[in-house]
Structures are given as structure tokens and as C-alpha cells.
Image 1 (cartoon, rainbow, N blue to C red):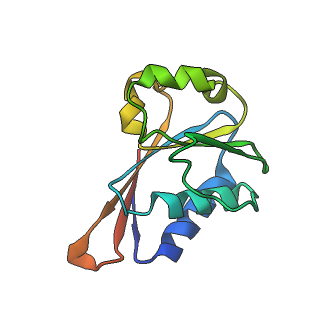
Image 2 (cartoon, rainbow, N blue to C red):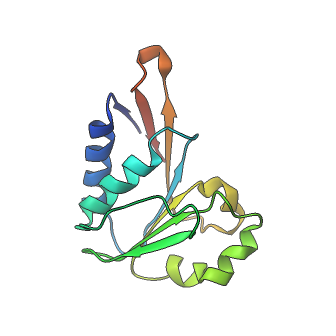
Length: 138
């Protein structure tokens, strides 16, 4: 399924609705180039989970935990050199727990991700305008 977004607000609202429907134990793998809107998506998703905290991309901390309707484990694995490093931060407990995992740059750790996951890929489509994004859900 592909959702077309024409603004940051469209992306935020689409992600908010996904967060509202998220279930315990789900893993969302968020991929896209720099500047495509992964953080905007993450903010909307967190809002849908009822999280009021300020959401930032955890690029340097790797993971941030937030409390909402469900616990959100927001990960940014851009700086991970080897997927095995994820086990040092408790990755297996997070993905096997009853919270929700939202993993930015998930393709970097594809070799350790469970097969049962939701892939979200955000792409710019400059042919349709500077703010146009295509959000593919698999």
C-alpha cells in the first residue's frame, strides 16, 4: 500500500493514525534517505500512541523509551557499525516485549530483525513537488 503525502502535516497525520492502531509487540521498520520525513513520521506515530513528550531522533543515544497507551521503543540505528551491537542495549527484550518498536534506518540491522514486522519506506517524489512523499507500507 502506498500513501501519498503532500506536506509534513499529511505525513504526521498518517503516522498518527498508524500509532492509534498499533498493537503490543509490533515492530515498525522505518526507512528512507536523509530528509525524507522519518522524524516527522515518528512524531506522528508517537502522538497516536498518546505520547505527549517531545520526540527527537535518537541518533546518538540509539534508543529512547516513551510511555503512552503502549510503551514506544524509538530506535535510530544509523550509527550502528555491526547489528550485534544491538544486543548490548537490550534489543531482544524490546522486540519481544509488549511495547511497540519503531526503528529508523532498519535496513542496517535487517539480519537480526524478526520476519514478522511492518516495513515503512518514505521516498521523495520531486516530480510531484518538493514536499511530496510516497509512504509505502509492506
